Image 1 (cartoon, rainbow, N blue to C red):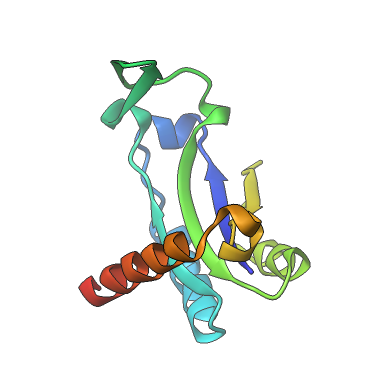
Image 2: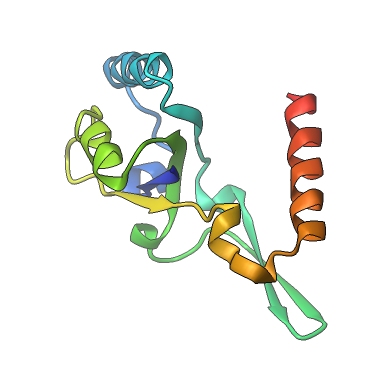
Length: 139
């Protein structure tokens, strides 16, 4: 099972406060453990929402909304993509993360091809496989 581990933003991450050396070292060690165990597929921190934009879709109309965005607790400050056997395994890995101070982290499983059922036709599966291969070849 693949899952996204979503680190929620807080007032410090939204203010662009960078982690101190101790946290960066602890996070580096934790990420090394994830990689060695074959769990971590990707992961990064995100700049504050003031650096971003949103696009609202309403029919054919597109509205661009520049950051910052309200409600830091609803924003994402960083993420991992993990490959685990179960949600329970992801939870156990996450419990080992070097967070404190009320950090909130969410784990969400990704949809897999088999989740889409018959609507995901053989042609669509072929397209998906082709696109994934192209992405893999670029990295």
